[in-house]
Image (cartoon, rainbow, N blue to C red; front, top):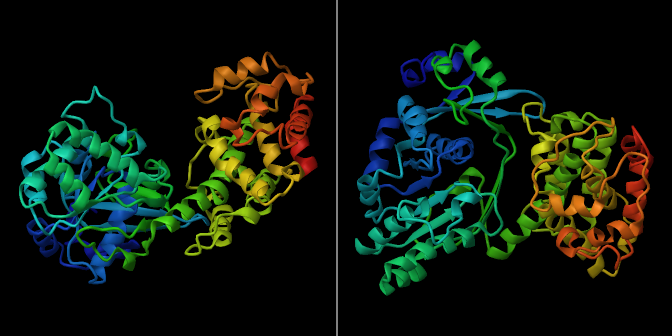
Length: 503
């Protein structure tokens, strides 16, 4: 079965269990190219698994009649190799927590472009019909500096906005769907950085008055194409897979978990497609902020970090395997349910308990999610104040004694134990990169199993609010963390023994 022949071979695809779009794709493409409404920048795996799929379903239901114009990111060659080569079609594979998969041929991309396709992009940006430009360019895509030239990605996007200003000055919404805090503000800052180079007051006024930058919270794990999934498709008879680079971050298919969330500030300057019919939630800015805090501070990220540091110590290779480890499964539940949920920021539009239920029971145990504790453990010093510090502050604001907590201090002790670079078998492991790693290890000094650490030795770390969000000594938590650390240093197997004791 060839992806480019899916319309002619539709029954064969259906017989093999694939969902295939039923709308008139050629008609949709013509309509979209003539009067585009939605352009997406950064056409990577997340976009193909999330935005392109819900658009495809809305087209099937007749709710939308126009698709998406996808613009590649920094890797322009991918547009040739993984979009145009397959007539802008791809297969979206949903990986369920019970090991099942569903497969869908996605046809919602009406046109694929490179950021270098300046003339066509300018033509699109001249259209009054254009409502929204969405972005998944990763957090790095918004970083700008004085050394950036007009060839920089965001500089080119700004150039397109300037072109729209000169050719009608029609309103437009730029909607970041990247997984970073206040992403719309980050995007706005990048655009304004390059807009300042035009020295055009009218253009700046246009951006201020007619272009909106809503913030959003997005959550969907989309790993690189999995070789196991490639084999499933190949066994089905899907052709061309062997001709593609197996090490490339893209393929003719994308695989992702089933769970997905996209909550957007309802601030659109030129109207918007009916995304809410596809499960997207629109709300006010304050609520989006609460949803992000719920996820990052309680329901997902803290659990991830707890599993990451202890996964490295207990020599686990995959997060999903950690969830089969009874003691780590219990730790995840205690961190989330027992010490997180009591002070969770409740956005009301999503139920925190239901969210964390999905994380613990479906998302983290998913055997098709090949995420490693070593990847999650990167830059932990930067993550702790957001993922745990805000929870501690919430307890303090309630006048509660945080020294009574058990599991969050265990995570802190586990992180200090992890910084020794010695796992629970007594073996050396390479600690993932962290901007404060050298500083922390200098304070810890040369530690070996069997050593006993005095609190005074690590007090500079324990008192550092930039790491834990609060001064652990001030709030009587430093003694507990130090005691846990010393228990975990007693010898081979002491980490697991300590966890078992407190679980």
